Image 1 (cartoon, rainbow, N blue to C red):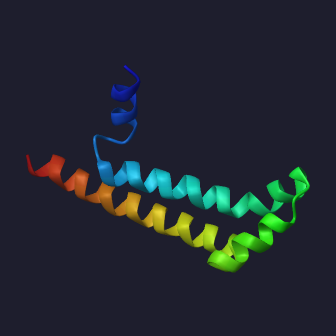
Image 2 (image 1 turned 60 degrees about the vertical axis):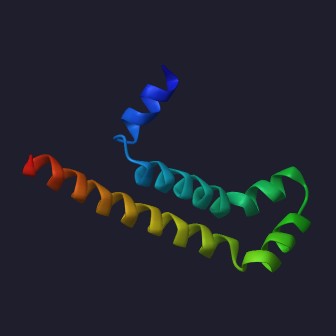
Length: 84
């Protein structure tokens, strides 16, 4: 039942499901600084920054990639529906 709902949300597209995962990771990366400060461990920010660079910028880039991918996939799904 849960899997059926998940498939419906993703329009039966693995590409859209993957884009949702990227969007979630991007959103999490965008707020990781605030979470680390709230948890009292500012060292986490430094560790992540040394691994991937600026965390907020990386998160925003991931969100943009996700949105563009979802829009592109929705366009192809719509074309497929119109063609038959």
